Amino acid sequence: MRAFDTRKATAVSTENISTVVLFTVLLAYPLAFGSFAVLNLSYFLSFTIMSLSLTLIWGYAGIFSMGQPAFFGIGAYVYGILAINYPGASVSLLWLLVATVVAGIAALALGYFMFYGGVNDVFASLTTWAVALVGLTFLNQTANEARWHVGDALLGGFNGMRPIPSLSVGFGDWSVVLFGTNFYYFVLGLFLATFVAIRIVRRTRWGYVLVALQDNRERTKTFGYHVCRRQMIVFGIGGALAGLSGVLYASWSNFVAPDVMSITACTLPIVLVAAGGRKNVTATSISSILLMYLMFKLSASGTEWAFVILGLVLVLVVLFVPNGIIVALFDALDAHVVKPLLGVRRRPSQVSETAVEGTKEVADASRGH
Amino acid sequence: MPPAVTEPAHKDTSRYFAETGPLLEMKDVTKSFGGLKVITGINFSVAKGELLCLIGPNGAGKSTIFKMIIGEYPPTSGKIIFNNREITKLPMHRRAEAGISIKMQIPGIFAEMTAYDNMRVALQYRVPRDQLKDEIERLLDKVGFTGDTSREVKNLSHGEIQWLEIAMALGSRPSLLLLDEPTAGMGPNETEKTAELVLALNAEGVTTVVVEHDMAFIRQIAKRVIVLHYGTVFAEGTMEEIEANEDVVRIYLGEL
Image 1 (spheres, each protein chain N blue to C red):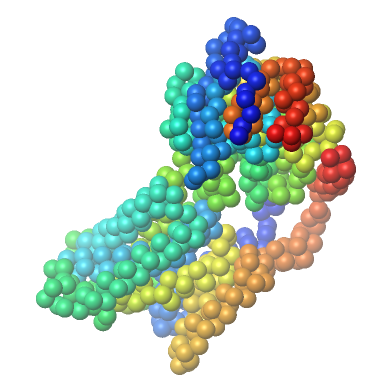
Image 2: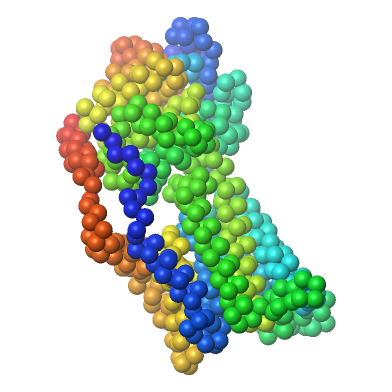
């Protein structure tokens, strides 16, 4: 008889425990650490939202975008332009929304041309990367203040745009600037929402199709799915999330420069996500936060080695743990610690029986022909 | 040069299925890849409820014909008509919606998903949420799938993969089922079981076209057989007629 369970046997897994620990630590962090540490962590978390966008479009749907920083930059610049021209607590969150949507629309447009035009896989990576570098090149030459400004906002070329007002919340006379701990919890809320949404979507009808089309696009089409449209939509959502990440960054640093789209900036999210395990939201979140922290420590200590070390991490991951370090850790802990502790035994394996039978039959077949 | 065709290409299929109209018609369809003309011009039709076998030497164009029917390759010229509607330029997903389903030659399972989730992807487009589980069980029982549905499918045996794929292809309740080498990698017992399955499905009214190399399998299921050679219909008839045809025997032995 067939075994017929549709979910994994237990909800207690290293991944789930790590998720609870991760968010508990993040929630309690400002209680234990000073404002400087909180400020830095809110920057890492903002960036982690871009990593999650890559989990969605690369980990689930197989679109290896090297151009997420392009949408990050669009989000940051659009927010900057709007907030400089129309500052004020009452409209600030509206600008966040508008900038996120603009980044999403830009990604939808790029996705439309790529996926409906049959550009996929490595060619999609190169196209997205090229778009980011075109953005970089364009913005770098916008130093002429007379020519390159939008209202009061000077694009500023290589030196970037400043000062970008921080996000703030206000109704009537009451208002509060999102800074320090406020900003931290605001970012944490958005990060949590993104995290939960991306984790849940994997187990929806929509999510199954994303994973299917990553595996075999043509086959997915034969089941009646409009694959190009789905790729475009998920790429658009990914772009919006990267844009949101950019808005938070612009608000955090009160500044944005073209090098957010530079070659190294384009590779960073990929390293963060690949190192952890691109298909797993918890793993990508943990690896993003830890590696951002490591980078920060390295650059703060004055070494030029931050990117060299990150590059080395990527090479080692690709060679030895292609599914990601954190995912490998999850699996090892599940197999050797969690399951023995819970007393979960392996199910009497029918698969191994059928596999043996299968091998025998293949052997028969090869003799037969 | 392709040899002279022994029977007219526009063969009247009415002697096999007088009572039903055609479900699929291929009219003067050709396909070239660059300068290479793979399908030099084919005409045939598949009647509603029919079980048609396409055979032919390697490179005769069997899989290419399937890929044109499902829309993966656009034909270079000619028309494809399905259910009295021209589908020559319809995109793949629209043809699937129209009722064409395929089990491809190369395994088309989603290797990283469980067998259950593979079925879910195949079925959820048509089947309402609350009936999904029952329908998946029904189809897996029907094809005789006995593997573990909660494990990733890359662990399954060849036979289980083929049956799972047939179950997935049936998920959309197709009116036309295309099977490209359904017994690839199977032993004699599995092949026989697959033949029984194909006959049973056809008896239920699923119009089926089978491409297969394994002549023992073809003999078990064949009603009408089309022999393809150099991208055109070379001969057509019952299995007895085909096996008695000296030209067919010659092309299979490689004399032409």
